[in-house]
Length: 118
Length: 110
Image (cartoon, rainbow over the protein chains, first blue to last red):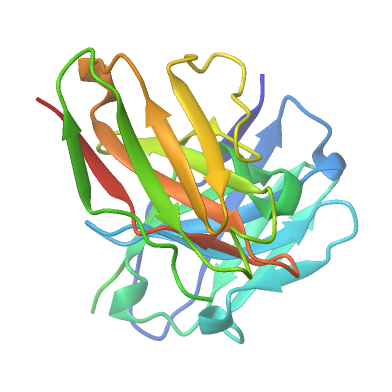
């Protein structure tokens, strides 16, 4: 069965960076993309961007352009999302998801809580 | 890209049917048959309920159905059950590998 297992919770100071990992199993990693979605406390879902696991092509949400980088390691079927220059409003649960047509999420990871606090 | 518009809340009694709307534009919902719906219980990750507008993943009850008319997609849940109480989000492809979510709808089963 498809599984995406994410790295553990992080606490960061404003201005720092965070890198979240997402290890995929149960499917051919390079046949699908990975979308990243975040959810601030008590808020809705926000799409952050998408990466093709086949060729590494990326597309990022406009509001995160310049602060986010998504990468993959096909040798370990793992995707990564790095967010830099963290602010308090980046505090959220970050999800990775296997992406189907149109980069829409199919199967979701369990989520990683990132807390930004001084 | 602007968020898709969903009602903040809907409610229904057990056994009834409810419909959640998701209004976008001709640049997203209206242009592509790539709309998904997700169910999210408190503290849990979202779960895919409908993809490509009206398709159900394996294991999802046939009480859940999706449709689209123009710039508006809809999720219908028939035979409401207590366990359906959750937040529901729509999501649409918006071209050029961009994706947009709705603001979410809280479903209360009375």
